[in-house]
Image 1 (cartoon, helix red, strand yellow):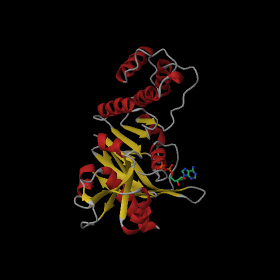
Image 2 (cartoon, helix red, strand yellow):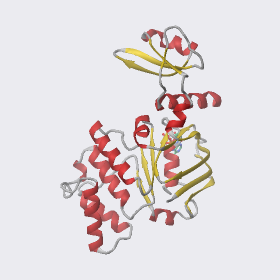
Image 3 (cartoon, protein in one colour):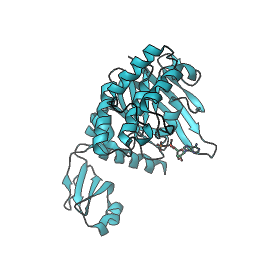
Image 4 (cartoon, helix red, strand yellow):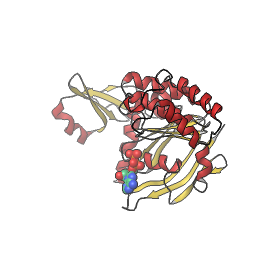
Length: 295
Ligand code: ADP
């Protein structure tokens, strides 16, 4: 059982943007969802944990490994799947994994072959192992990405915005693969897609403007909103007005008309119906509240 402990992590970029503003968080084995809108600071946090950039202050430990002071140690037990998984033009899936395994210090040829073949089976790409990765679909590339992140028995796997660009079938397969792997390691899944977290993660955090605005289980945070979310289908021309008079946490189109969700402790009347809150409501509520208090 590994534990990742982050304390008071801050990072201000040279242009003055405070991307991490005192982050505290503790994460154990399993899938952890880090949810936040674009610009929240997720990638800054992921890159810091992946030892690709430095923080200004604070600490981050994976068990007894000091991530900030001893990046080399961390890299031995880290698997990282970045947003853009770039590959060399002609390399095959087999060659790529073999190459990563060499970089990670697996020098015994027989062991390396066994490992690469095992991983290719695991991500269901064995049949295509001698094909160029460049020609793979988005989902297949992501599976190669996961396979390379698994080389060397990592304790911590960081996956940054993984499902952007995947079709629903590919996304499902990718989710299953992650869930399968997550039993033995810490996987942090950073995403702006609420459904990724709902489907996969037993623990989560919501980030906005460089701060953690929630940490816990999806169930608990959803329970906080019980009885407080109301929905109504309105006309498109009415959206702005409703925004002025109600706390609108989301609007989406249903059969061509906006369906709005508003937050209210009491029944707003006026044709609103009570609705069971979902994680998307939570996400928009937390973002809304934290942005309002900062503004
Ligand atoms: P997210 O991954 O949640 O979209 P990021 O960590 O990429 O968030 O960005 C957080 C904030 O920091 C944003 O305002 C972004 O514009 C800014 N930012 C990110 N990287 C840099 C950088 N290298 N230099 C300056 N500002 C940056």
